[in-house]
Image 1: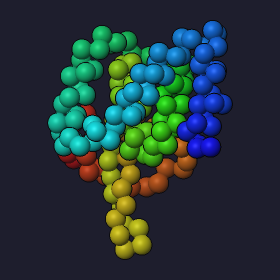
Image 2 (image 1 turned 60 degrees about the vertical axis):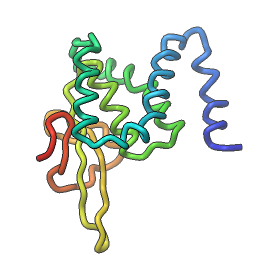
Image 3 (image 1 turned 90 degrees about the vertical axis):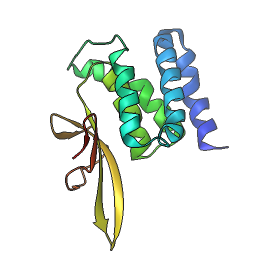
Image 4 (image 1 turned 90 degrees about the horizontal axis):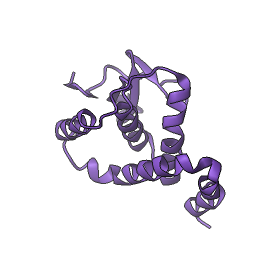
Length: 154
């Protein structure tokens, strides 16, 4: 049995539980967005940045909150969707960025590279107030980001 079908079998019924129905629609939205990440990344970053910013300005969710409870409520369905699709840093970062920005959080999506064993490796991460935000492990030190959303090239 695949990991995706295991995850759906294990976590899917929880979404159907009447106590959790308020998470079903956000989960489906997050799943749809996360599934579209490979297509969205076919756009050049400045174009994707501009497209996303238009989505945020018309979202009508101008409420800014810094409460951890709100962040957890936003990220619960997002993290489940990203986990089901087994996204790495790029898919996880872009999906979290989209939903946090729509909710009014001031986060920045950063792209960076570094030398590892004679080759370049890339990473994508969120920053809040200039500090890595929601990184799953210890923050790997990358030099200055080479691109940020919003605001473009550094």
